[in-house]
Amino acid sequence: MDRFGCSSSSRARWLAGRWLAAWLMIAGAVGSAAAQETASQTVPRVGLAELTGTPGSSLMMPFYFTPDPKMPLRSVTAEIEYVSNNLSFQKSSLGLAAEQVNAKIETSVTEGSPDDKGLKRSKLRVTATLPDPAPPEGLPEGLLAYLLFQVSLDAKPFIIRLVPTVVAAEAVGNAPVAVAAIGTETGLVRVEALDVMPEATCFFFSH
Image (cartoon, rainbow, N blue to C red):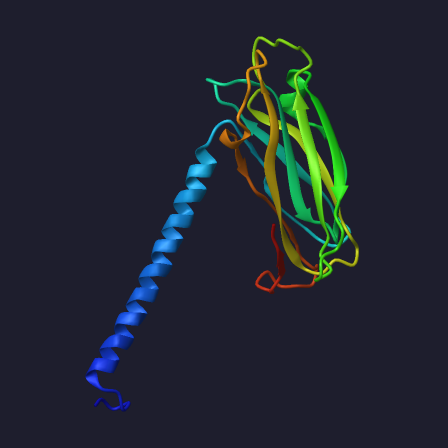
């Protein structure tokens, strides 16, 4: 027995359990990081950014595209899901990459009903299309669109994920495209009160 009243065998089992738990946590963290790295390297890929604002502010979320030279796309459509109780989509505007090729950007919003916790999820549909039915090149790399969101004035500090899913795509030459082969990068909106310290706790809403 040790000074805590535990036998040697009990303490050995306890230490083994702690070691196993620590190993599983490390393995999970490594696996998660590897999966994120793999997703970030997938091309073609659409992606969003991380933004910070305050209650009542307007936020311009960039909508990026990274092409695959081996599979140029004429169009791509993504649905972005997010908790919309205090975050509402306003409008879109062309990004520099879209302007340079005269690409068309179309957006629409589908608002869901509140769940049993009162959280309402909306889906923003974004489509980028080249005007030429048979373009010599696909959608270019870079900023395709700015997505303007409005934070409500009564919003409390929170963090919300904007999760894109590619739902349709058309390759140059009208070749079929498997949307599962198109990668995505999640966006993040962080709302902070003006009088809150940076280390203050925030609500966290995710897909």
